[in-house]
Length: 315
Image (cartoon, rainbow, N blue to C red; front, side, top):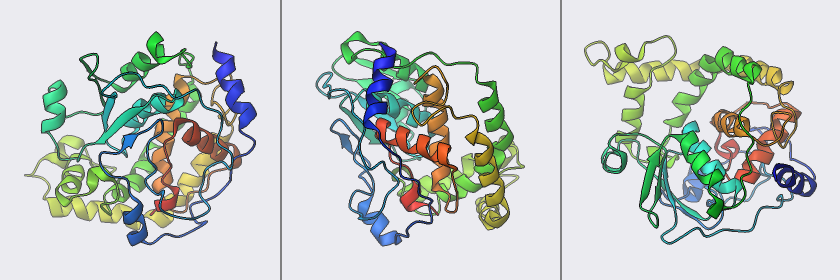
């Protein structure tokens, strides 16, 4: 059953547009006007946050074939997520890949009540299936639940492989990308979970900059919020030195990607659920240059999963 899914998409996908984040510029006003609402309902595909903009975007010129749209029940399944969160992207991917209609609810970052009412603590993603009375957390458990349910179509994912090379790459470069990404998440209110100032303030307090321990960072007796924000600004000012490191890291990743359709030789798998979810965050960094194979992989996964990259709003 697995090969047919990949072959169907591969035949339909003729090319991927290779574009860097410097290919166009967009004003903050235009970006804000195009941002999706924090409760966008997916009608088979999640609404694109920048749909109102007209530009040469980083999406394939031809959309790959997708499975027939599936309406699983009423009300539709709901996934509660943060847009920037890689774990949340995992949960969103399986719905897009299988073309299952669902509702996406972007929680404000400082909303503690909603996730606590659902699963007992502040966490994301959360899957709610009202027509079955089910609620569950943990991203890969959600992916497995949706992929393997016979009522939701044939399974499409192969098991995760032991890609020690990709894991080593992620570990080696985590701090570089973390220092570049985190300040950009909260520079503006463009991401739905950070639309309000208090949500951005909470993220800064709870997510330390490189070189600091999380417990110390969150301790108000050791850091004021102004000191935390100053460290975020310092990281942003290091972009000129960090960006070449990030681009060199992406060049190293090029050899680890098997094809635009899947990162591992065996086909579309849990490896792709994890890798694309992590790489998507990188596209918020203006000046990132992805080598051809990595870029083609990102365009393909973005299109198939129906999850837009940040390229057009990179900072």
